[in-house]
Length: 469
Image (cartoon, rainbow, N blue to C red):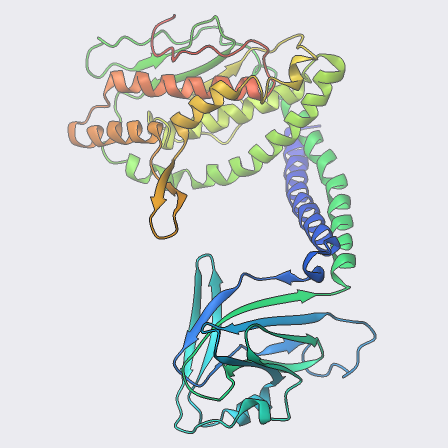
């Protein structure tokens, strides 16, 4: 198969596989939740407090099936459950559901509040106030409610969903202004489990079509790049920290470890271009999102191949090395080093670019080691890589009394920021800092190669900045 055909297969396979895996995950979640008999099988929201100063809180219009639907349906759509309780235990609360036109007539001229939308993370209701001067009659005395509940403590309303336009109203039982109540909504339906099963089946069928196309495309592309799994024949010379200004700095890892990460510092970097590289790299980031998905799938396939044969399929190995190479070129250009202004090429193959990744192909791999090396044995390195590239910080929330994760710059990101700011003001990229940044990246990519099952040699605990150690 030619390269264009392989790219088409890979693209179609990735798209179908992503859609299929999403459908499978969604179908499983729906089916398992529908099978859960806790809380009588209801899907429920969190209990949140709603407080308004008007006479009533009115929900958005609940349109079930739209106009023209028969009043009686040949199947049970589902049941809506609302639980409400006044914030003051001694107060009586009223909650009712009725046709929208009847609620509009009841609250005509009455100051009330319409709930437009709700954000739950964090909780933030958006209200719209409808002005009026009239006082409403007692809500419990009205006869148009399809379902209602009233009293002190928690009140529960259940309603079998029916066609029409409906509205939920929550008020004080004595129709006084100023409402503060806790509300929880729940829904259950006999249709949910069959719907989840249908989604699951469609997802499995889509995966069954997409995965072979993805793997076939990856194999085809791997076969067209026969040189990507071999070490460089003439690696760039090690960088010299004492080199004169304007000279390029190239660094290579020692030949003792078979995962090679190469980066050559551009001696004529623009002072300001790093400010827009993140934007220019967006097309590459979008492509890499799909390539990393393919990388995960082909690594799983390689796991089984190594387990049963002791060999990593050469074409898949070449493809995965190409993904690592593409990722490093973009990272070296934009955010993990910012070491060149040369725009990265859109290819998995080796090119004349100042950043490269080469992994020596192993003729044999341990069939037993594959069971533990990508997670258990890698834990020490994963902790170090998390410290290098992670951006989460822990902070104590006094009001909630809990620890929460907040974002921030990683160590690698901070070092690159220092380097490019220095470049902006001095016109030079600090060479010792470049060597250190490249060493951190080299450590990360060795761990990636080992975790992706490409080698059995355990990654060394060293940076290998610019000298062979």
